[in-house]
Image (cartoon, rainbow, N blue to C red; front, side, top):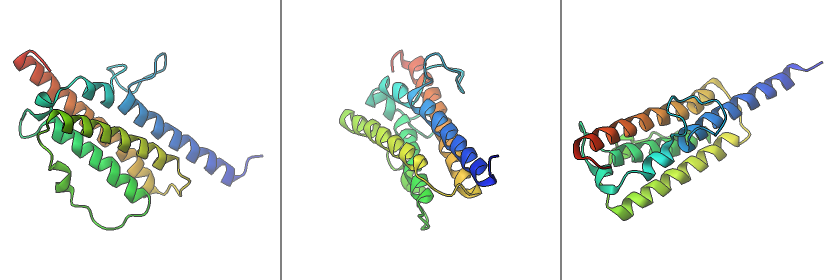
Length: 167
């Protein structure tokens, strides 16, 4: 007979694996031949950002840019992992919006930093920790916030390509 502690460990493992799966899908796109949480199959941060140049990433749209959305999403991933790992000091969230325009080398560097933040987030989720209600909420927040900004980036990209004919 399974003990309560073993059941809890199994539930926590399932929770972490589910969050990691959704985070992978948000950044890498849906795995071929598997169910998807997203209507646009195969679409994630990485292939979305790969199709956008620095000029398009820097184009202002209703007070924001793709570069700003990308930096903010990366900043959030980094800070949430810090909080999951015990950070208690406040964050100046305004700092997450400082990048608005990028040159091509800066855009390449920002895209690479997003990949590093994502890989770090997966490692952060995999660490053995107490999945309290607060920690579980932050883990869910990693996915929800990233998915929101992926959608914002894709919508801004669609608007930019419809007005000038290229991305």
